[in-house]
Amino acid sequence: MNHPAISNTSLALAFMLVLVALLVSQKEKLGLHKDILWSVARAIIQLTIVGYVLHYLFDFNNRWLTLLMVLFICVNAALNARKRSKRIGKAFLISLSAIGFGTGLTLTILVLSGALAFVPMQVIPVSGMIAGNAMVAVGLCYTQLNQRFADNRQQIEEMLSLGASVKRASAQLVRESIRAAMIPTVDAAKTVGLVSLPGMMSGLIFAGIDPVQAIKYQIMVTFMLLGTAAISTIIAAWLGYRRFYNAQAQLTF
Amino acid sequence: MTMGRPGRPVLLFRSASFRVMIGRKIEKEACMSMEIPLLAVRDVSYSLAGKTLLAPVSFTLQQHEFVWLTGPSGSGKTTLLKIIASLLSPDSGSVALRGEEVGTLSPERWRQQVSYCFQTPQLFGATVCDNLAFPWQLRQQQPEKRALQHSLAQLDLAPEMLEQPIAGLSGGERQRVALLRHLQFPPAVLLLDEVTSALDTENKARVKQLIQQTMAQHAMSVLWISHDGQETGDGARVITLTRMEAAQ
Image (tube, rainbow over all chains, first blue to last red; front, side, top):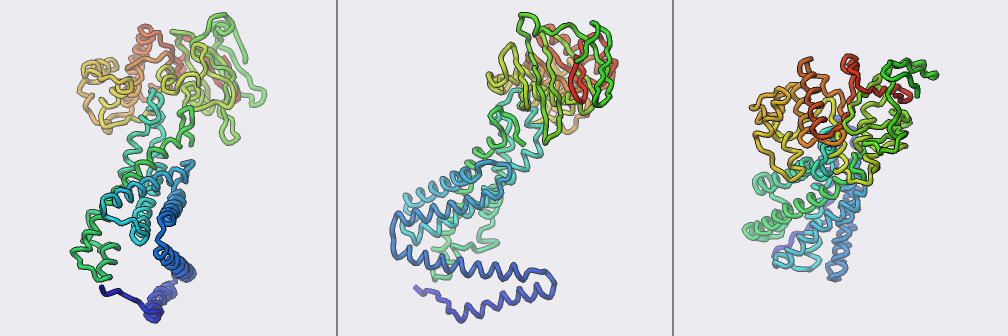
């Protein structure tokens, strides 16, 4: 297999693209200098650290360390999803349960079905992909829940005043929120290969794998992204909606 | 609290605000007797962000009783009804139904017995039928179409309206459909918040007649917010809230 390698000189020359961005910012007075330099610095530092950590993990090839890395990915995804929670209390725990369970279940199915070998080189990148996608879906689900609860406050209270349980009064909003949070993942699945050649497939093609083989992996990725997003948003929504009520089944905002 | 003679209007003066309210004296509270009242509201108050929305108020309501709740805007009438329906928790005081306080019953059970009907209701689902069938579904029952049509007819609404989308309804039609939702399974205490504000005189009378008819048939009591002096001057008991306190 022809391993692609990129020299430090080529990388330094590619930095010219950042200079182009800085030039545009300067010319159009966008005021993005600091942001561009900060983001580039962060990308270089974060990726360098991740590169060395993964290099070490792949060499070490320890199951427990691999699981710890998966947990680390899920915790970070949950911390990030929490930022969208606003009125939803205990959002970190809810997000971690949702993303952790979704990622865990998907990984288990992939490993048991033989699609994935339980080695850090396969498990960690795939965990990053599915947990990252679940993070976006869960964050979107929180935004939807917050918006819909605020917009339909009176309707919820009217259902409650007729004697409905909080579950019954929220069911429609929860369903709509899950649906809206799933749409980007579903749309991405619809256009995969037509609009963009996704990361997994592109990476394999870069590494010299026959595109016909590469698409098999991409199909697997599509399955796992859909599955994890669905599981994670359902868990986040059904755990999250209760946070809008107190013990007396009254809206808390 | 200021009291006058039975049946006669009484002027209530607030020394702090010099507000003058017209109320009506009623018989002594039933809590004085040995009998447990149907609904007992004791020293209930509510404030939000340091602003008093409802000053302490106490009263009781007996079975079959019809009571008007009046008072100027901002005196806390809606807040009081929402507290009684357990949609809000008071800062202080208690609300009890047949001697059992809110919290001893599940919220669903409480609200099926003490039900609050909004002034400008929002209907849910797609059609009128979705709204009238909702209380039945909560009780795991499936209503007969004819029963719902009969319900509509009680407030002069056409049977065909049952399948009509809610988006096309007028304000008055929405109010009547919302009220009928609460009357599918009449509660022990019905709390009405200016539920006829969008109706003409004829329909107002029809609503009142239906409420009285339901009270007689189902031992229901009613606490009804109204700003209409003509309505509240019908000889029924009146509770008037002032901005600072409630009085009977």
